[in-house]
Image 1 (cartoon, rainbow, N blue to C red):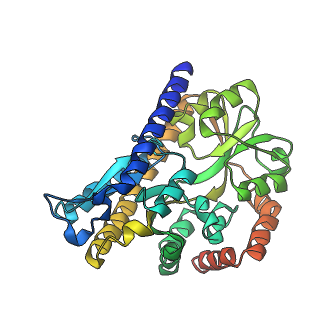
Image 2 (image 1 turned 90 degrees about the horizontal axis):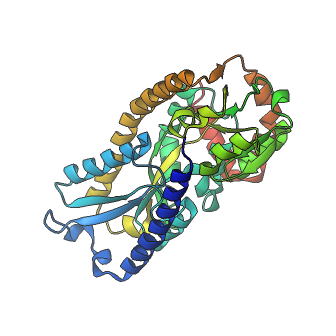
Amino acid sequence: MNHALPTRRRALALAGAVGLGSMALASCGDPSRQMTSADASSSAPLTLSLANSLDPQHVTSKALAAFATEVEERSEGRLRISMFDSGQLGSEPQVLGQLRQGIVDMTRVGSPGLAAWNPGYHAFGLPYVFDSEEHYYAALDSDAMQRFFTSNEDAGLLGLTYFTSGARSFYTGSTPVRTPEDAAGLKIRIQDMRTQVRMMSALGASPIVMAFGDIYTALQTGLIDGAESNETALDQSGHGEVAKCFSLTEHTRIPDLLTIGTPAWERLDEQDRTTLREAAQAATENHKKDWATSIEESYSAAAEMGVEFIEDIDQEGFREATREVVDEFGADFPEVADVLDIIEKARG
C-alpha cells in the first residue's frame, strides 16, 4: 500500500478544511442565515449545513446522506441539508464550537465528545456498560435515553438521533489479548477520551493518544503494539495488513450522535422540527441493518487478509478489571450515574 498518497490527500483535505471553514465563518453575516423555516419554500429553501468527519463512503456517512434526502422529500423541498464530509469544516471539537455559535447547523459526533457540555456523555465511553448489542439498542432506543439526548438545548445543542459504531475490540500485530493480563504492558492507541485513558490504566496497558490516520504506520514500525476499534478498521483502513490478531473483547459500544445547534433549532417551526426528528430516526433504523452488513463484509475481508479473530475472551475478567473505572465516573459525575441508570433499566 502506498502511504505517501494518503498523506498528500490528508494535507489537501486539511487545506480544504481551512478554506471551507473560513467560508463558513464568513457566512455568519449572510442574511440567509437569519431565515426561518416559516419563510422557506421549495424555490427558496432553508438550507442547513451538516459537518461530518467521516469519509463519504463510510456506512454512517451514507446514513447521513439518506437523512438529508429524507428531509428534503418530507418537507417537499422546503428544507435541505448541505453535507460537508471528511472533516472539511474542521475536527469534531472545532465543529461543536461552531455549532453552538450558529456557524455550522448540524454535525455527527462521537458521543463522548459532548461530555464537555454534559458530563453524562462520559457514560458511553465506559467499558462493559452494555451486555450485548440487544441491550445496547434497547437502552438507546428507550424513551428515557431519547429525553437525555434532547436535554442539552440550553447548552447550545441537542441530539436528534444516534448511529451505532459497533463494538470496539483490541487488535494487535501478533499478540492475542484474551485476558486482562495479556493487555498489561502493551502500548495501545486510544481516542482522546478520559474514559479510555482510565480503562487502559486499569488494565496495566500504556494508553497512546494519536490520530486515527497515524495508526497504520505506528503499528508497522512498532511504535504501538495495538489499537482498539471495530472490524471496519481492518479492511477499510488497511490495518489488517499490519495487525493480524483481532481479539473480540467488545469492551465498549460508543454511539455517534446526530446533533443540531440551538441557533439552527430555533429557526425551525414545530412541524419542521418533527420532520427532522422523524427523518433522523428513520435513518437510524436503516443504519442498524446497513452497519450489520458492513461488519460482516469487513470480517470476511479481514479473514482473507490473514487476520485471526480471537473469540475465547475472558470477558468477565475484563469486566471485573475495569469495574473501578465505571464506579469512579458514576461517583464523580451525577449525570453519568443517571445515564448508567437508564442503561441498567434496559438490561434484560
